[in-house]
Amino acid sequence: MAVKIRLARRGRKRRPIYDVVVADSRSPRDGKFIEKIGSYNPNTNPATVLINEEKAVQWVLNGATPTDTARTLLSYRGVMYKKHLQVGVAKGAITQEQADAKYAEWKAQKDAKIEGKVSSLTQTADAAKKAKLDAEAKVNAERAESLKKRDEEAAAAAAPAEEAGEAESEAEETQE
Image 1: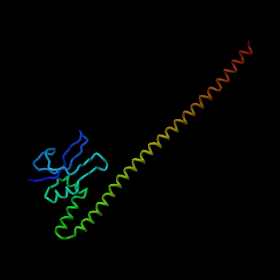
Image 2 (image 1 turned 45 degrees about the vertical axis):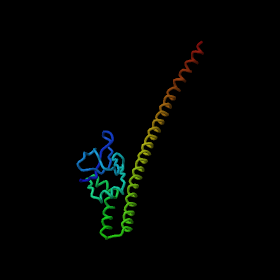
Image 3 (image 1 turned 90 degrees about the vertical axis):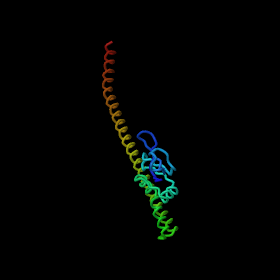
Image 4 (image 1 turned 30 degrees about the vertical axis):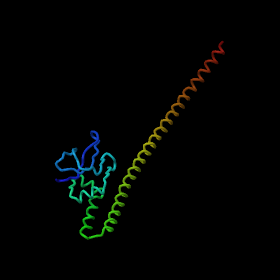
């Protein structure tokens, strides 16, 4: 029986979420599977990839063949690198402690890179929000200035009219 690690689609229309599953190669994409080992959500930025690394390494070492997309996701989470190190340990090229140290160092760098991207996206969003608020405050200040100017012009136009009205009322009182 040929076993593959592949994606099974779920989620609503135009908003897919995928399960990373181990399945018989003859079963349909969203059909029967042997084990679910993770999930992948491409709708977030950066994409969310959650994989049970121990199970994934075990399946890959036992001969499960990942599809191209699944291989990319497994590489992203370090499963393929861990498999590579385990093969080196089995051949006697390195010790288990060295392999664990290399993997831990790689994992720390990868997590720092992902965290850096998340923080830069957050900073960019905050900067855009601040710029939008500043632009809105500028427009509001211009509006307030134009309203103030309009009120002053109306008051200035009303002042001569009031003086003329007072003069007419005085003239009528004197005529009476």
